[in-house]
Image (cartoon, rainbow, N blue to C red):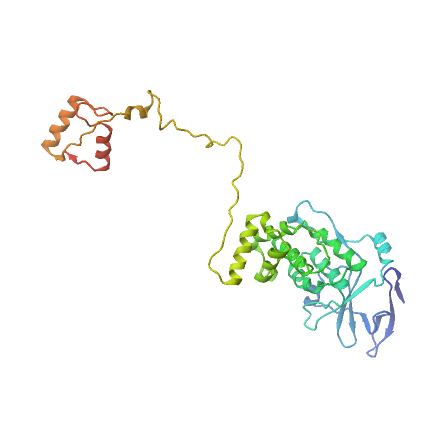
Length: 343
């Protein structure tokens, strides 16, 4: 006989018809500790280091986990989150003493792809374990099992409060999972331990990186933005809400908001600089205050040589000079508007 009083568990040995001695559970009738392993089972048990695999004589498998509340080592940054679970057995013994159920049993689906949750408490416990192990796709699916229209029991509230441990996870899928949990529990008195406006803004900003298995539907996202998030706090939330509403209404027009202009100090362009329009007498632009220009006729060959000889003899100035040429004459020569060609 093997007893685990803290968890109210006990196992006894029994000779089976095939001659094998198996350890059967005293509380879960017909289930014994199973040595069976497979890649699918290993995947299913990932993140559950404290679980025991049980099996019936018919080959149906179940997973047993204690109702303890795990925690993980703190990480300096969310990119380096450590998924190893730790347990405070002294604290667990105190908490378990006031609980009617001290372990949860999750039947394994025949496909060995997922676990069934039989109670809200067991669903919350499994959701927490999956979230701590960064299995976001599983968390997103399990969130639908956390629907509750009544007040949480002390056991359920204690487990739900532990979700604060995953509030610092900045992964795009983590934001999606937290929004999904908030949406599912929005019809109850449950308060999520994270800021919905912040989560919605982060989700929108990282939407291109959210995996397909964790994306909110258009209806879910719109319901969150309309009823549970103050979209007026940020123009991105307001624009996203307008865009989603246009999708559902099949309307072609979307009213967008623009961000407010940031307030800066000592801006370089805050001063109206008119020095170019009102130049000093010694500046370059002052030479163009009074310009005379008389466009010469187009000329080629000897005629052009004669003009050039005359202009250089009289002298050329920016303001025009004796022949009324100057800056505008050079400008037309360079742009090809005035044709003075020797060859």
